[in-house]
Image (cartoon, rainbow, N blue to C red; front, side, top):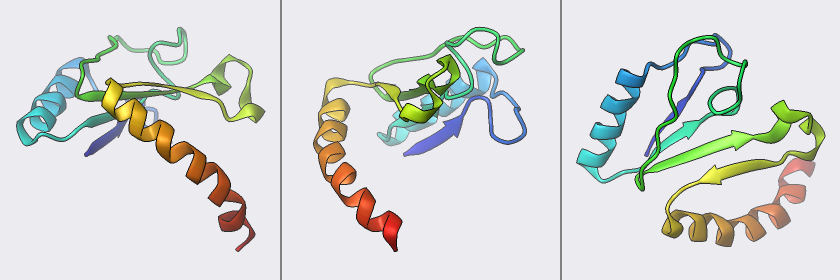
Length: 106
């Protein structure tokens, strides 16, 4: 799995469209997903100040946070991915949600 933030945290640097396409090609070549954390970027307008186009295909997992839309306390987000990945994440979510309280207490 290749994971990137767009823009990066804490510097705010933005991976260019060209760099993202190269990472996507590399991920596809090796049969691994490309995970793009867009919490502070595309598609939310006015958050990043450089030209950046959204990129998605069935090998990409897009993660976005709704915190930037005024919901910071709710820890709510959106994942866009192919059906197989969404099913796996959905199945894990119940387990992770139950285990979190135990992990936090330690």
